[in-house]
Image 1 (cartoon, rainbow, N blue to C red):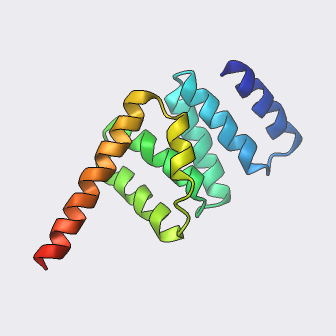
Image 2: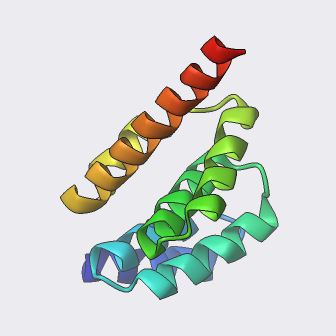
Length: 121
């Protein structure tokens, strides 16, 4: 992960507008356990492109990991509203096992509550 971080940092230096390099850097930081630093990088990347699903999904996980369920839900809603949920499955490969389970459980229970609410209406 540290090698990936160094490579991604060099790529960002060469082209600061390369969104993939920013995401790669954040993923490497996350893998190394530097969650706050990853969060900050993702916020910078999001400020450049506020509707980018891969960034929103990663931020949602970090918010859920911190226990900020409301913020995580809002970010997941934005991912769904963009219409590009294809980023979710590949991102699950990046997440650590406990975080993958957290995201899957959270999304599962949120989906069940939405379906239950719609059935009651």
